[in-house]
Length: 129
Image (tube, rainbow, N blue to C red; front, top):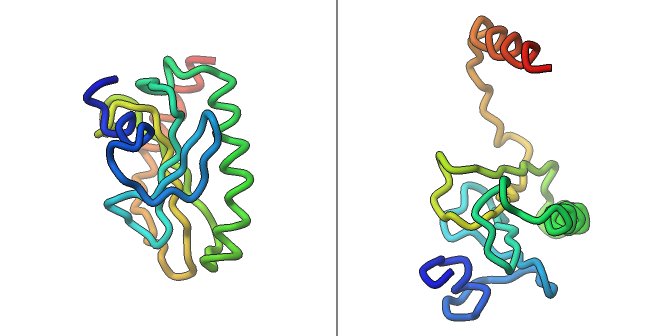
């Protein structure tokens, strides 16, 4: 897509700090990281979100993440990894991308969970099965 920032990164029109690349996938550092090593995994072909990405490309993205995960541990001392992918709402760039956020001891904030809200969500999903 002509105005897509990630497509421009793939074409080399916008520079990036690339940490992995093959003929279908590119992994580069996020310009607004929330942790040391926060990067994005994108397909080189433009897909808007999870609903239109090719299943083989999605599988390859997972394989790349599995290959990179031990390197985050070895090179950065990460003790875990959060994968995050937004669709539509919260998706600032409308090009499928997966955030990889290395996790470090002590970086965790305990979530405030409303148990009743969680129960309501769980019950709604039970009705879908």
